[in-house]
Image 1 (tube, rainbow, N blue to C red):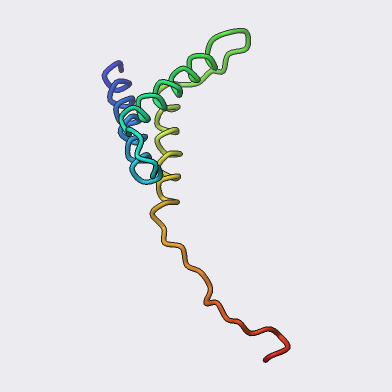
Image 2: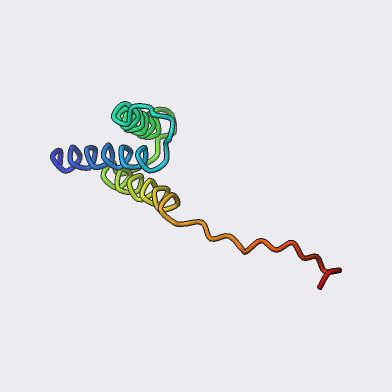
Length: 94
């Protein structure tokens, strides 16, 4: 199970790297972004599953769900924007 968690963590890091390439245009470092996002997600998971009122989450399922969410955000950047044809007519000129 530890190997699958390590592989899923690597896949999450790669997913964040792909998201950075698709969405960010400011020239920042994608590897640093992916590392920070992955670390932040794992910190969030550990804070949420420990403490006074912990959630009963499965780490494997949580990482798979986060990967699915990030892929959904990547798809938003892949779709072309289709705009209506601009016309200068008003209802009075028809």
